[in-house]
Length: 474
Image 1 (tube, rainbow, N blue to C red):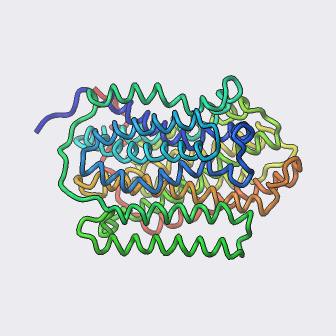
Image 2 (cartoon, helix red, strand yellow; image 1 turned 90 degrees about the vertical axis):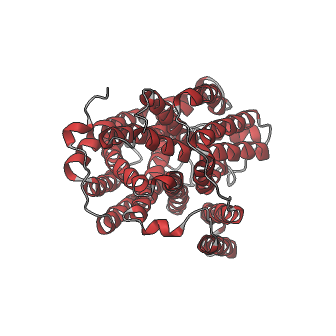
Image 3 (cartoon, one colour; image 1 turned 45 degrees about the vertical axis):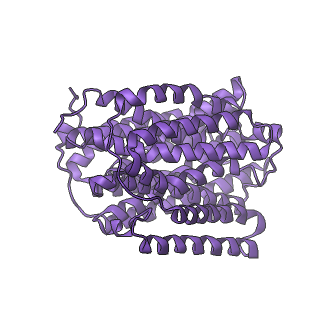
């Protein structure tokens, strides 16, 4: 049996970069949306699909990406994903009208759905031989996700203010080219497996998730009691039920349903879903509060979120591994979710005449600390619970859980915010009330995650001693 790759830490840098980029692409367009709306002619109600076209394609195809990674090899899918992301970024940047822009964003999402599960599979291949190295690698990988989401807002502000909005997409192109050149030399090869691709399963789960997001996004405009909302939700439920039925019957399903009988896998994925559903609305509405209530322009608004990014990096790389080694993944996950809920409840106290130092900074740091503690142990539990030959599937499932939670959480909290006044641009008290309600809702999601994690995760302790987690690698 061959030993560990001497280039595994350089490979990890590329894997973490991949995670950073695919998550950054969900948030980097936020500050640029008003200028995109003006240049391309988006209507107010359709503007959110610049975000959702990416997230629906990403979340809906992650299971397929995981399956393809297992069938054709993670290294091959990793490189293919970068190529697709590059193409989508180019189309989104040069788009002359709405439908081209949304097509480019969807293609970006497809590329991300190939990159994300194969990246996690490659990480497990590179570091699965050593539990303490694996814990450290997961910490670095995990820090790239929320850091990418938060840094995307900052970079989007810088690019929009000093260049132009197409560059929020063009920034991916040189990174993708470097990644394509580095994938072959750095990443381990894996033998392809025999098997088929579940086309009908892929269609039903992707369309079902897309319909659910569409219904929730549209509900504030057409009404929660409208026939349109409930018909589309019924279609979403029917499609997802059909997906489950197809998986139960197929000999080679897209997602083997019995995998959820693996101890802790279902519980960890549910935790990731609720974590995404709480975290993404928090930074989204925090950015809106900074710009629309406190009056920050694009660059200062992005810069205001940098303290959160720094704390997340420290928390995931230093604090979370030590805490896992000392207290076990369950206790750290629950504690992190409780801190996240507390931080967002604190953020709900924002006022129309508030300030960054008093209303935003302390509560956002508490939230960031909670996120950094909850993300790593729940992610590690989710991907390490599956059999090695199903690493791509497990990676696809956990990425799907987080992305679907993000999309549905943001859609639901947008509805809550609008219902409480956030649609009244220029009315600072009404805007603040709407954002405050969204923070309370997101805090409730995090609290639900803490309660469910406490009830469903086992109390196992990691085998990695606390002192070994941060030992320098050789």
